[in-house]
Image (cartoon, rainbow, N blue to C red; front, side):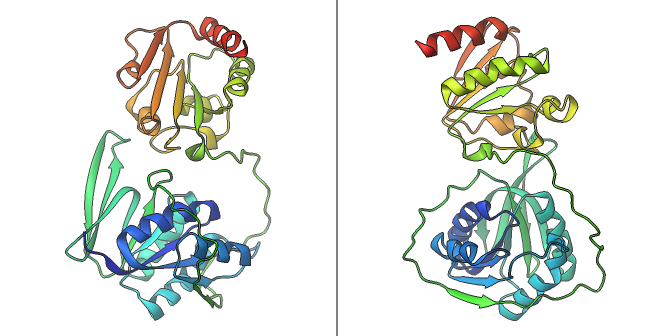
Length: 314
């Protein structure tokens, strides 16, 4: 695969730069990062693989990430507008990507899982139909905007001795923007399941929210993080949205995924199938999850989980 001269990266979540920079280094000889954060965030981007960093400054509390579209477009036009821009596939970055695609007349593809070069153009493989199928799109416009799903690229080792160029950027005020009147912190979780080594997922097999205590005890014994299927997060609201595993949620890269009371529909298993070892427990022997599991146990989780806790504590 021939490489491009340059690739841009941007994320509204600084922890995602490691994966984006790894993806960009596969595509381009040079990698340029646009960083909205502190001086430490700028230095970290260089240590993780950026050759040049455009420092957008620390985000103003009254500005949304999308408000930086004009600023980013101005920087890219002045440097290398034809180079592709990789963004993390977050809600804010997808909104930013939509604005940038208009400002720069650029092709846009969301939720990339693989990236390749064909005849000087980026070819993006992404999921659609709720994860039931994959599509490959070649972006033929001079500029290309691509959001990349978390967990699909392995971060490079950080090199604290690495050197790079830092360029300060002045904010460009958009012609039209929404006014931010007030910000209220959302109650949520800071967990990043895409980085967890062991994950326990729960589904509709759990009868009541109070029964989470049983699974939490197992997670503590296993030193695992808790995740869930979409109905648990978005239907029952028993767990935070950040813990939802699935095609529009988290894609696991864990060593172990223990699926408890999860039927295993494709929309969920797209998120869980990246685990090295999948263990499923379900009382329905015909549950689809057993088609994906390395190890399966047909049983009631209300009997299996306490037994597992007892054995693991010995």
